[in-house]
Every structure is written in structure tokens, then in C-alpha cells.
Image 1 (cartoon, rainbow, N blue to C red):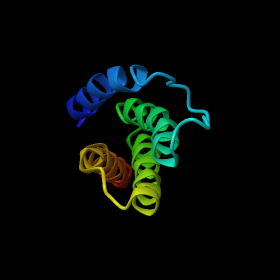
Image 2 (cartoon, rainbow, N blue to C red; image 1 turned 180 degrees about the vertical axis):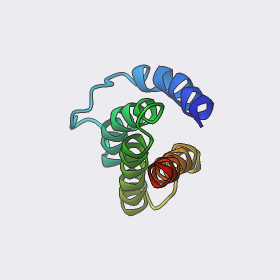
Image 3 (cartoon, one colour; image 1 turned 30 degrees about the vertical axis):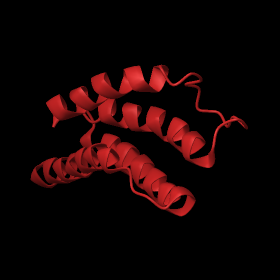
Amino acid sequence: MRILSLLVISFGLPFYFGYGNPLPFIDSSYTLWDNTWLSVFPIMFIGLALGWKYERLGGYLSAGAVFVGLIIGIIAEGEIPVHMLVPLAIGVVFIFLGARKRAIA
């Protein structure tokens, strides 16, 4: 999972910073769809990075942020960004790994 989260971070960061205004603040010239994902991406990246050491925390941050983004995306645009299912799945696996690690200890 660490390798997958690193791949998502290394692949996603250039797109995030290349968007134009990568700050997670609401910009009136962007659509609700764009503003939602510009707010979700930093939380998702932080969650994926935290998942390396703190699986449950990282999983909840990344999966929760992506899940909220998917719900708002479905409401606003009526479509599901399929590529965001990958970080969602990584976040869910981090949650399960953290829960398993805690149950063993």
C-alpha cells in the first residue's frame, strides 16, 4: 500500500500544482466541481502520506476526503470520477491495516 500511495502522490501532485491556482480556497471563477477537488486533494495527499506511519489516521483522512468529493461530484456534475476510486481504495485498505495492527497489539 505504501508504494501505491507514493505512486498516487507522485502522479497527482504535478496535476494539482499545474491546475493554475492550487490553493485549497474557494475561487469564484472555478465551478463547484473544481473547488471541491482543489479542497479535497491536499487532505487526500496528507492522508496518503500519513498512512505510511499511522495507517488508520491516514486512511480516514484520505478515504473520507475522497468520499466527500465523490458525493459532491455526483450531486454537482452527475458523474463519478473513476480515477479517484484508487485513492479511496488505498485509504480503505489503510483503515483495515490500522485496525488489524491494533487488534494484534
